[in-house]
Amino acid sequence: MLKELLAYVRPHRRILILGGLLGLIGSAAGLAMPLLAKYVVDAFGAGGSMAGPLLGLTVAVLIGAVVSASGSYLMERTGEGIVLGARRRLVDRMLRLKVADVDRLKPGDLLSRVTGDTTLLRAVLTNGIVESVGAAFMLVGAIVMMATMDAVLLLVTLGVIVVVGGIVATIMPRIQRAQAQAQEAVGEMGSVLDRALQAYRTVKASGAEEREIAVVGEAAARARDRGLQVAVWTSLAGVSTWVSLQIAFLAVLAVGGARVSSGALEVSSLIAFLLYLFYLVAPIGQLVQGGVQLQQGLAAMQRIKEIEGLPAEPAEAPEPAAHPDDAGPEPVGVTFQDVVFRYGEDRPLVHDGVTFEVSPGGLTALVGPSGAGKSTVFGLIERFYDHQAGTITVGGRDIRDWPLGELRAALGYVEQDAPVLAGTLRENLLFAARDVTEDELARAIARTRLDDLVSRLPEGLETPVGHRGVLLSGGERQRVAIARALLRRPRLLLLDEATSQLDAVNELRLREVIAEVAKETTVLVIAHRLSTVTGADRIVVMEAGGVRAVGTHAELVGEDDLYRELAATQFLVR
Image (cartoon, rainbow, N blue to C red; front, side):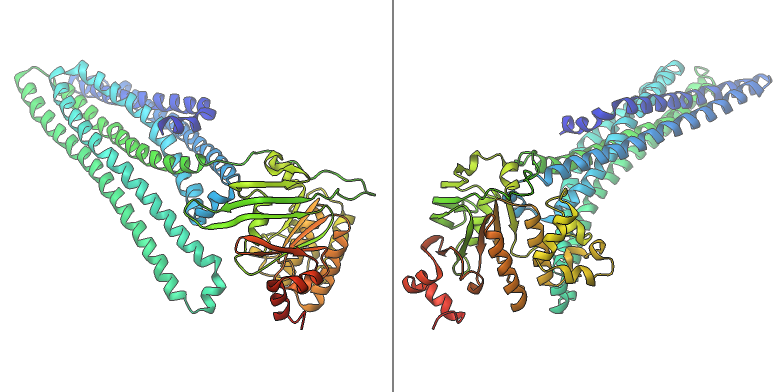
């Protein structure tokens, strides 16, 4: 973990070295002050002029302050750069994770890793490591200066430092474990709060505010308890250091006083030695604090590496291939042959020998009861998940042989809940195809019957749609998602319950759009509302993870009992 921590420092090493050198110079100026104080005392005892020593002392103070402030600024600036790099790297990794891994992670905990854990890195990589180097220099320098004054008193001081080191070394691993648990608790609290915020209207409608407040409060209390454990061990380290140094002061004062009485040590030397002893408080305290921050950083690094250690999808993601104005995308077919899939080793089979074929071009529908595995078909085609057995081909090529970016560039996908992102209507429409022309955008808006919406919005296409498109109706969000997919000009269009939130009029219009698009490309639709697919070229009936029948609406009504039952419940047959 320490090696991983230092990897974040490497791009900033020059500025860190400069900041460290400035810190060392400031420390050196501080080390000169007790010695200059000795000269002031000696000059006072000898009845000489104190102007020179006092001037030197003043200059040392000013130089030390300016240089230390400059070094501190560079450290803070570098710390912000380190946090920026860590956050970019972590977000890059998160957005490239496989869907299966993200499914089992909690969004609130992921946010905690990007915000809280990376902030801990800032502290450990600046104060925790770099400033500790300056503190170590100051500690060594003070010890050297003390050695030149009196070796006996130095031995007393070193004995105390060894005791401090032993105590802190025992406490540090406990701080790391406590910090890791505290960060996990904060992530859990974020997850609980995120759950409530994602279902905000449901919470309100259910009158569950008090209950959710209590749940989040319990999670916050657990985070506090974990934080208190960190505080206990951190405070113990700090108090142990303080008490040890007080004991050292009393011991030095007692032994030093005896040596002054015996004539073995001058009073000015004892005063200077005691000043150096006081100077040890800051560097030792800083080293202890640096050790604490290092343990916190190691705990944060471990949580960050958990995400970075997960397998990621390839970074390449080419834009959809350009098509001449007079030619549409070349449709591709899809085949499933004995496909077997489950979401986890401990989960039941979702697909158990699924076999069907979708010819290039035209409209194919997947129908069947809930839980039959229809949406999973789309997840496998998009390669959000990898099947365990069987063969899936797209355009006659095994799906595993497609470069992932090229495969997804050939697909248009409308999810069942038709997500709309925070931002303007234009940004949402162009989300999957950033380089389309205004004419193409206008054509997609017209095809999906969004003209009225655009004319009604106060700022037209530039109107913000709110978080998750909350300012749009369910049907409007669905049409926005479909227009977004069409602008991609896909070779295969996947529509999962694309008309579920539309009224009868808009459903009829969208059915016409789908039929029109099916003349240009391959359209694969999942439908519970059979009225939207009665005119499909082929309908695949799925049940219990398998395919039980394939045919047209008329053929299936006459040949398949399940399809006939589904059609009858929707008044499509008598």
